[in-house]
Image (cartoon, rainbow, N blue to C red; front, side, top):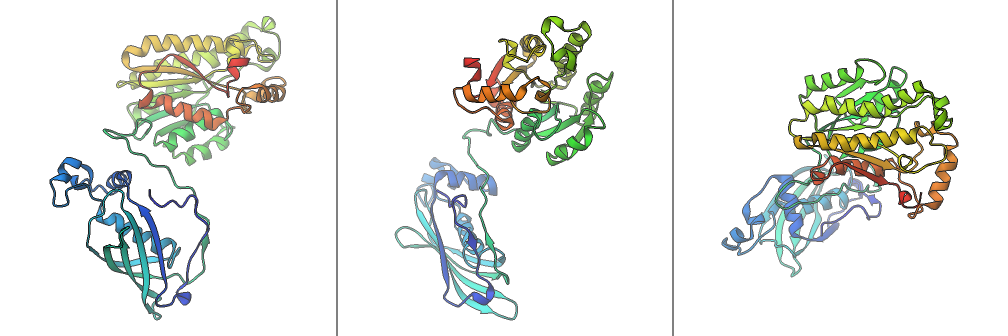
Length: 423
C-alpha cells in the first residue's frame, strides 16, 4: 500500500536554520503489484521483469521485482514532506541499488542530515531504504536546497488511480469529444455533466443561449478548457446547424452530445394542460423535444465510429406531478423520441438515452410554479431521504458516454434517490 497524504496531519517543514547534522526522518510502505503497475504506467518503464511473472521467473531474481526508482521516489517523498519538507528543492541524488524489492516487501526510506553548507543553504543527506528484515536495498546521498521560510500545509485529497488489466479504463473519456447544450450557470444539470466528463478526460464544445447568457457561461466553459464556445438558441434558424458546422470544421467527428434544453411559455406552463395554447404547446415541443431530433440528425454524420446522444427528462413524463403541467406530455414525447432514435441509429453504433433526475434547483426548474414545495416534499419522501444533485447526474452521464456502456441504449434512467418508486 502506497503512503497516502489524504489522511495525513498538517505537514510542517524544517528551515535551513533549524536543521542540524544528524537530524533524521523516515517513511514506510508496502510495495504491492498495483504499485508496480501504476509506476510502470506513469514512468513508461514496462520492463517485463516488473510486469510479467513468467519472464521474471526466468531472470536472475526468479520473480517479479519492483522498479528501482520506486524506492528512489520514496526517498524523494521523505525529502519533500518530512525533512526538510515543503519548499525543498532537489539539486542532486546518488543512489546504489543493493537488493531487489519484491511485492509484499515493507520498505522504510530514511534520510539523515550529513552536511550543512550555510553559504548557499544546501543540505546534504544520507539516504537509505531498508526492507522488513533490516537489509539495505538502496543507499545514496541527496543534495537539496533547504527552505528558508516556515511552511505548514494541509494535504489535499489525491486523485484516485486504478489499473485495468488488458486495456484502458473503460470509464476514461480521454480522446473523446462531446458537445454540451444547455449550460446556463454553475447550477445547471448540463454543467454538472460537463464537469464530470471533462474531469474524465473528454474534450468539450460548449454552447451559450445568447449574448445575455454568454458572461455566465463562458467562464465556466473556459474552466472546462473547452476549445469551442459557441452561441446556440435552437429557436433561431441556423444556429444549431452552425454549431455542428464548427465541430465538423475543427474536429471532423463527435463522440457524444448532451441535450439539456427545455422551454415552455410561462402562461402555458403555469396553466392547465387542457388550457395550453396551440402556439405554446408547439413551442414547448419544438424546443424541448424536436430539437433533440435535430441534434441526432446533425450528429449522425459526425459519429462514423458510433457515439452517444443524451437528453434530460423528468418522471412527470409518466406520472402526474402537481405544477409540472405542460412539461409532462412534452417530456413523454421526448422519451418516445429517445427510443426511436436508439432504434434507428443503433445499427450505426449510435446510442441514445434519457437521464431522469429528481427535482434539482436549477434556473429552468425555477419556472415551475411552487417548485420549492415540490423540492421539499420530494426530499422528505424519497427512499434515500436525499435527492440527487448535478454531480450525481454528471457521473451517470459520464458512464453512459463511456465505453463501459457500449451495449446499453434506448433507456430512461432515473437518478433521483428512488423517487420514481414512490411518486
